[in-house]
Length: 200
Length: 235
Image 1: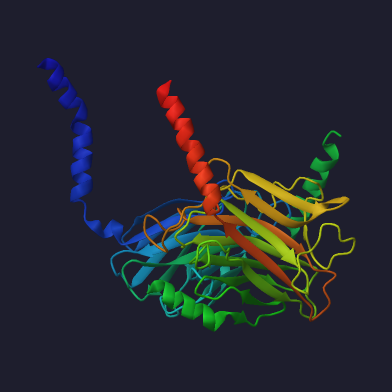
Image 2 (image 1 turned 180 degrees about the horizontal axis):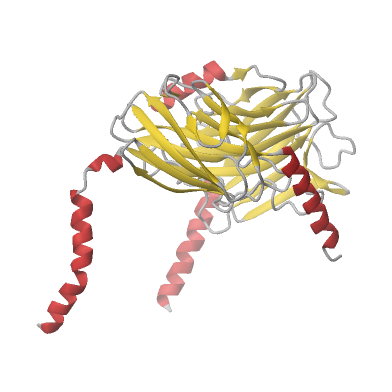
C-alpha cells in the first residue's frame, strides 16, 4: 500500500505535465517547422514556438564548407490550421567563426519554383532586423545587406509570410549567409596553413 | 490531386530562362518525375544552384523499367567553368522504397561520359583536390558510395552510385505529414561540375535514377531472409 502511494507520488509531476499539455490551447499546432537540410552539424533549427507577435524561430549556422560555399538551411513549414498570415520573429546565431556580409531568405515550393500563390513574403510588412541596413524584398526573396554579423553574434529578423491558408499544405523557407570577402581570404589562408602542417 | 497540380506546374516551368546557365528537364514525362532549379548565385565567378527533384513513380508501367530524370544544361556566354550544385532535395513520392541511387553525366550527344575518355566534355570535380570524395555528394540515407573516376585521375569523376546495405533506403511517402519530408527525402550535397570544355551554347546532361530491387532479386532476397529467420528460430 505504502509502495503504491510512493509510486503514485513519483508520477504526479508527470501527470500534471500531461494534463497541462492536453489542456493547452492548440495555437501551437498552427504550423509545423521541420528541418530538411543540411545536417545539423552545419546549420540547425534550434527551436520554434508561438509568441505574442506570431512565431519565434531560432536557428544557428555552425560552419561554411571548405571553400566558403553557403550552407543553405532548408525548413519545411506545414500549415495545419488554415492560418493565412504567419508572422515570424527569428533569432539567427553566427557560430561559423566567420563574419557575415549579407543574409538571404528564399521561399520555394516543393517543386523548386521560387514563388507561388500559396506562400509569399508580405510586401506590405516591414522586414525589421538588427544587423543590416539595406533590405530588398519581393514575394519570393528577402536580401539583407549593408551590415555584418560577427562570429558569435546573433541578429533578429521579423517578416510575414502570406499563405493561401489551405490546411495540410506547406512550403519551404531557405536561408543562408555569405561570408565577408576579408573573412574569405583569412579562411583560405587558414586552410592553406592547416594543409601545410598536415603530416605526409 | 496535389500530384496533378505539381505535374501541371512542372509543365509550365520545365524550361526556365535565367541569368547565365539555362536548363530544361528532358526526361521523363512529368507524370513520372520532375525537377526544378533554384538559382542561388549567378555571376562570372560563381554559378551556384539548388535542385529539387521528385519521383511520382520509380518504375514504369509493368514494374520493371527505371525512371531516369535527365536535366539538360546549356552553357551561356560569361558562365564560369564550374557549376556548383549546393544541394539536391529529392522527394520519394512514388509507391516504392528506394534501395539505391545513381548519378551520372552525359555529354552533348546524350551519351554517358566514359571514364576512359582522355578529354571528356564534362566531369565532376573534387574541390578538395584529393581522391577523398567524402564531402562530395554527401548523403546520410545510403551506407555505400561508389565513385567512378576518370582513369588515371582520381580527382575527376563521371558517376556516383549510392547503395543501400542495411535494407533501409529512402521510403516512399507523401508531400506533407508524418510520411512527408524528411521521412521520404534524400539530400545530396555539393556536386561540382566542371564544364570548361563545353562550348558556349553547348549542352551537357545530368542524369539521376533511383532503383528498386528487380522482382527476381527481391524474391531471392525474401527467400534468403525467410531461410535465415527459420534457421534462427529452430536454434
